[in-house]
Length: 203
Image (cartoon, rainbow, N blue to C red; front, side):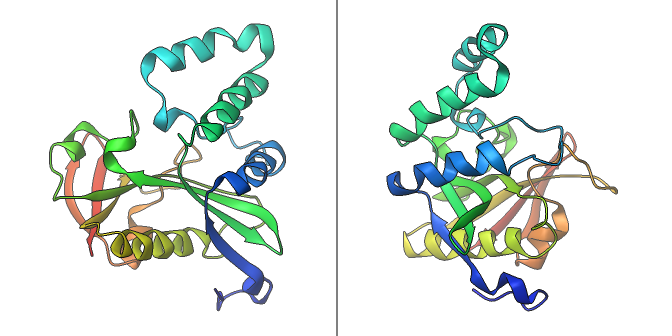
């Protein structure tokens, strides 16, 4: 995949997470994700697929084992059990970005209730992006969305959705992507509630 706005991005490849890529996933969150002090870190993108009870148990271990070490331990278990789904971006073999995307029904959290109540059929949800510092603003999120939509269509899905926050300014805590990102990819606004918008692309 070639990014027209940046020559160095020619080597970027988007790959669907698999057991063979678990080490690359951990390497990304160990060493590059949030390495600029972004307040969302430390994180290994476990929460979307954890229920409230598991999250509470994980948090209860923070003081004894450290926040990052604890979340990483849970991530390893979830990766081994194939409970984390999505895509990694690679630059010359180095993992530099992550997109958490899967069937809407696979998520315990992060999908708004009003989105679940207004599904249009078999749907893939995009719930999180994290791009390594130095790679942001170069089109990785758009590349992720394109790959998610291509795979969703090939696998018989009706639609792909994202859940953008309504904001006029960049929010460091926003991991869902802005409305304009989805609009650029051909998504449309379906419904708005509590400061969040269902952005949907019918395939």
